[in-house]
Amino acid sequence: MAADNHAVEDAIRAVPPPRGNRFINCLVSCPCICATAIMSLCMITIIGTGMVIRSEGANVFSTGASNSLNDVRTREWEAYQSAKELIETLAQDDQDVEESDCVITGWGTEPRPCDTKTYPPLTQSGDMVLTAMISNSDDNLFTEAKLRELKKIEDTIVEHQSFKDYCMRGDKTGMDQSCAQPTSPLGFFYADLSKTGSAGIAQVFDNVDKLDGAADGVLNAFKTSGLDADLAQIEGSVIRMTRYFMNGGASSCSASGFGSREAFNGPGIVQCLMNNSMNGLSASQLAKDVYKEMNPLVVGLRSPRGSNLQNVEKTLKLAASMKTVGLYAPYVDFYFDKSFSVDNPVSKYSRGMIRFGMPLPGYNNSDDRRDEQRDKFRKWFREEFNDYLKSTKGNNDFEFLFFATPLIRDEFIAILLGDMTKVMVSLVLVFLWIWLQTNSSVIAIAGITEIILSIPLAFFFYYTIFGFKYFDGLNAMTIFIVAAIGADGIFVFMDQQI
Image (cartoon, rainbow, N blue to C red; front, side, top):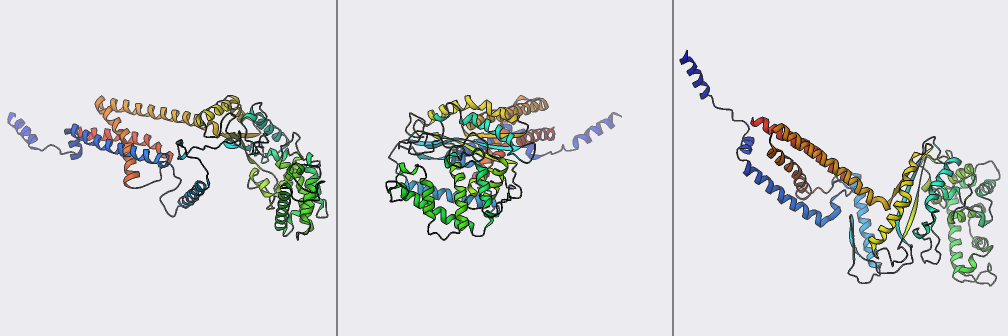
């Protein structure tokens, strides 16, 4: 019996042990050499990645193009880049900038020399608030009740006691210090036509309605063949006549016989110049009548808006007809959605924009102590409007959304901190799980380190070696996938070795 046992034991010893996976055996048998090689490779690629990011800055992220020549994004992006480079080249040639050692740099922008000129306060473009409005209760955002609520929201900003200290000035010379009007649909529905002698948009609508010979509520005058060309001819003539008058040209419209900028605002001057401009034109009489009847509205849209709501129904019908005419379409296109038309004069969506100016009083230009100016404005805007604008989302009849560029940096940093917190929590949980499964803190530390270092390693090969330039911000989400796959790889190696 003992002999049989010895024979079995000898037979077992004679069987060669399983070879297993050579790579894993090598990795386990020579951990220090493998770890040093992997870490060296990671450090080399990290240094290379850092040099790429340092040289190209934000351009390594989200160029907007793909690597496929058949992808429309590539063609659109290349066209945009070409146009951008051409504009920058022309602007650089035309700029009369004094020599300066100051350079403006920013994330995502090319370095440029500081502006050394002096501008009137608030006449350069600064931050802005972009707004979007969506009707929740029905397909028409522009009802009397909703328009009044929208005006309350917008007035909270534009009628703030300190708004004039930060608003964009309409006059670039600085002589007129009034604020430029917001780009808003409210400027249409609250247009002030009183200075032109008109009773309002309802009267304009009725007058245009009569031009086709039938006051039936349908503006057939806008459907006249050749109206676009005739109106363009009239507009060009009026502009030339107005410039001639304001530059001191001889004119029968002025009592002195000569025009001037001061005399232009006199009573009846605009109407007289408009009538004189039309003399001798080949445009049809209907086109001339349409231009005359629409002029009070055009003047009202360029002027500060009033406090009285216009007739909403007739305003929508008039806007829908204006959209079909080239001369008047720019006044309404921005505010109504694509389904808005003569047959469907309702709009579920709209948008607007409130602009702020630079430099602030006490500064020479927007580059003069740039960070100080921006911090001062951002602090004022956040304290006065941030909480209020966020509270406007609670309206049941419509949704008011805003994108305030003064808050971008703070909001972006808050988002980054929140996302980084989620990443850190995920990595900590993965580390603890590896430690629990392998019962080794060394393996857990080495594993999570290599998982983290694999990101710049992969980016170096992706961007530098293989030359792929498309790297969207969403690609940063790969950290979660890499953490899961990396931990699973460690478990597979351990199971294979065991």
